[in-house]
Length: 361
Image (cartoon, rainbow, N blue to C red):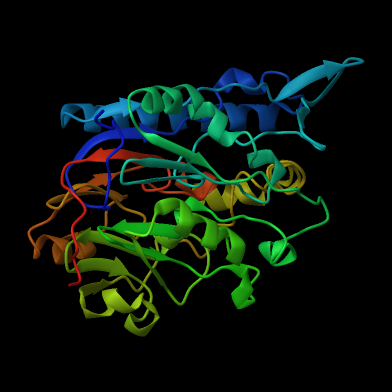
């Protein structure tokens, strides 16, 4: 049986992709604060508009597109008061479950396998359920579907350091595929609160992927797609110094990205508003990030070794990329600053043409 999941790199020609989904505007109808409600509705509406434009780019290129489902309500009324709808998740309850906007974060597709992983954040526990029907279909058609053992979460734990040596946790977005080789950021055992997983989690992913893959660390923490973009064999974008790259990549041509996209004035004004600060700090702290250090130019997504989708428009960077025979496709994901995620985050490549190439022998 031929697996519908077949992907070995970040840059081979794309055939099928999952594009994320935010909550719809009416998910916020019960929010009392009119300014907050209008802001959230607008973000939701414009996020889906951008996703529909992204879907059109893919379908026009002959790529099959799949979308997650929204399975949970955000709010409910109790005694005439609007409250977060609580979802029972084993031994604990969670409000404001994350929308499935970043299918990349907690699912790794590698070879013929779908590998679901877990975050330390209770509100992210249900995220992969949004793609459950898609994954069932892939499994029936021949894909290998593997899930990380569920952790016991502790509400008092504030980082992956607290789970080191006790839980199997690691974000899929902390890894990148390149044929037989897989690159990753460091786990919390390297003593950083910015890590996105534990040493046990990384060990489990290595075993789940299989012995045919070689794993190499970058001297960095967090999601790797905010630090490295593999454009084609022997070429990458990165703001990391060459010596911090995984050892096999240090010999590749490097297009350095030294400056990040400035935060737009509208987003700065929005973030200064009292209701935004209070709501985000109390309820949405795990949905979105702080974006000040995010390099959206790095968070690119390849349609193939000659075309790459890029966040926004950077004429100087685009000119450098074109010198290597690659055409950058600019895309304005308007609320990437709100969500703290770019084009690689909101997509999950499921199938690319080409096999498991050894790019480093």
